[in-house]
Length: 493
Image (cartoon, rainbow, N blue to C red; front, side, top):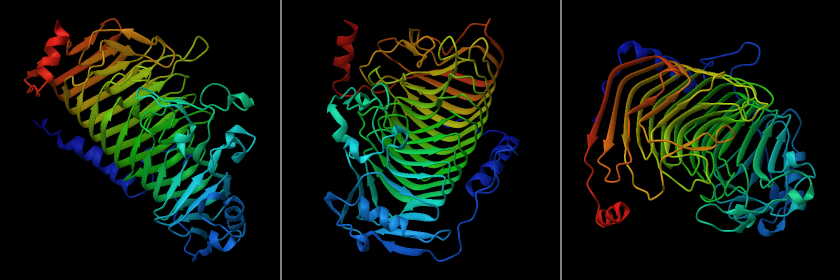
């Protein structure tokens, strides 16, 4: 059953700014000190250079690094240049570096493949990428081909719950079990364009945008092994004026992940995309030292993911003016070693540790959201970092179980309280000041295991100024599939 339509004034207030984003006009939210509009590309005809002319064999066995880098370096300065990779070949390479004006034209049927050896990457771990651009402008990758990180060669033990991965931490270059190369990185760049491209099997993060201005990511398909940890789809860090549209992301870890490590993040728009992940489909954080402001997510489909729309604010940064609209979500349980407990919407702020500050989250709008999930919505502020001015308008929330994984847990990770036993509720709320729930339909399956408890769960001492308008909660009967009745009978014995 479709939820009632929002009032015309609300439709107008949402539609107008979204159209600005969709047509790449000036941002809805802007900070005069840091933001600018996305600039038009060069009108000059680009120079075209083929890596084959510089000696690339493309046999997938011998390294073509020198030929590829020579082709890039031969591009004229301050002029657009397309470095082409002819189809029907696989170009094995160590790290290659782009310079201003260069676009890699990896043609359909061609693959640029990263090497799996430590010596294929620079000594400095922060530069471990297959393709890297630093301090460059008017750069990108396109052409319809593939960039492949050979991620499966970094698996030391395959496990359906979570793979065990190679870590190069023995080198001293980095610590922990996440010491592996990323696939593509743009650091401190302007006017970045990635379009008509397939990114495949990263060993670690797939596409990393750091301290960049004016980035367009369009018609990009990302595929990472579903059981591999830390193979994030797109990580946007300390960057402003970014548009992601018509992307398809199917990966193990977080799919789209804005972060703030060294500066704020403004004006990110994500539209018309499809996501599947064993972690969070969209996650702000958990690196959150500086502010997030002016983010719009519209017309997105999220399927079979561990968490839908997530906020993990742990380091004192503040979040404001975020819109989620026209989103379909399906979330389910996976192994608890992955962060997430099947929440369609997860908004949390708490200090990562005793030395961390508490950030606030305010002015969030969720409108026209439909979800089917194995767990409820989780909204959790902290004593010094309240959630305020949250609006949930025109939502259809369906709760039912279809996996055998245990429920009854609230997930505060990373840091904070960790995993905590808690009843399963439609919406759990704590440390909130200002919440509007309008035209929200909540439906519950007739679960034989009786795992559902309250539609709304909160303590009045920490939750204030709630408005419920046209809120409906009801039971629905779901048909039991063949063989399911026997399984449920065993579970209740």
